[in-house]
Length: 97
Image (cartoon, rainbow, N blue to C red; front, side, top):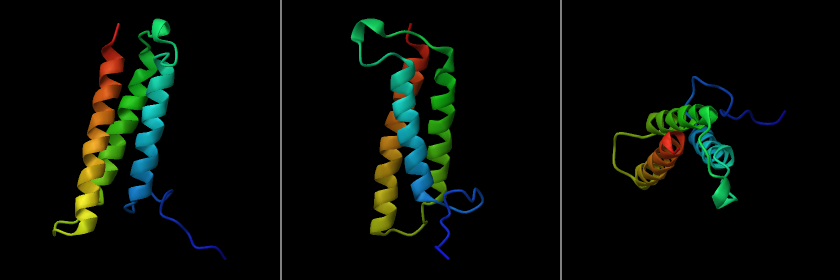
């Protein structure tokens, strides 16, 4: 029997779930705003979905942070910084006319 991962178990901490949610929010946010064509950038009311996904990913990553200093904790902090930047991008694209 293959080992069970904690990606789909919402009560358990999963750093991979946070990363996947954040990357999905980033890609979805870019697609909803019409990113590949600069002249087609537009406001989409569906941008609230990537914003909520990015918030959820930040919460998941915070749950994975240990309270003692280690290299794992440093990696989680770096992930948090990148997720906050992606959250800022999603919020910007949500309000962009």
